[in-house]
Image (cartoon, rainbow over all chains, first blue to last red; front, side, top):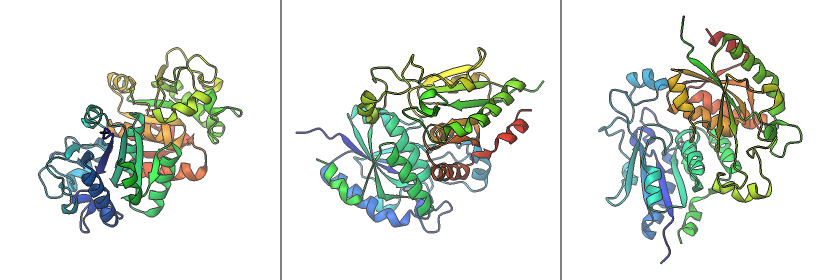
Length: 190
Length: 190
């Protein structure tokens, strides 16, 4: 039996960032839910490792970026224990899937993600979620730095505008990140 | 006497990336040399801390990103001990300035930069050099993650094209990085 060396990283698909009336709604987020779900189901059906990454902040803002401290005190988001911090219902993690909390953009920053990926002997990561210029891109660049072969599912990630999204996809392509579509994920999971 | 809480990070202004005939020449690099030099002289004249960051790889490629291993074996760059890895003559570090080697894009990745900045009680970092979408941006985003107030001197950083440069400056502005011009650096160093 061949080893399962490819992991899925779903980034920040949380109520506060995705729902129509969310305070920190990312404009393209709702549109990618079906594709993220399709990628997730593909990983589930082949039994490959799945990581649900979520930004979760302490209510007092003590773990927020210093540059965001003031705005967070007025309009907090992704606060521990709130509905806003939860992953959207459509993508609800299953018991056997990994949940990793983060307090910064990159899924690798001050988290145990890299340690778990190494223990699982993962070589490739597939990234989906929001939003392209921030949490997606920092995670993708860090994944490259940590020597993972990195796939970005371009129709399962989104930002505030198509223009920003496209400019970021170009930069990621230029450093060797493999840009694929949802329908190509199946071919990776052999 | 007020503490000097602002440090300059000069990124990758090395022969292999800057010189006209360099194998990994970044198109906009030569044009920013005068501005980088002006910022450097400003920090020198006020006696604020200066960090010269340089990508330096082992000749056998054992420390290069796995995704670049093949191309590096054919066309190595920034190899330890070569002229190509050296900082360009115009920006040659002085004895009392910090030199930090890195093997990845971000100046913070597997380096002692953050430790030194903390020991110096630095609160603000000013970033110049090349290239905007890669080493500059990863360094700037990491600086924000590490809670530094981050300034990007937009006419002292460059990429392969103005379009890529501008798109990246926009994303950095959107996360709260302060975008300034060379002439504004003087005002920061009080």
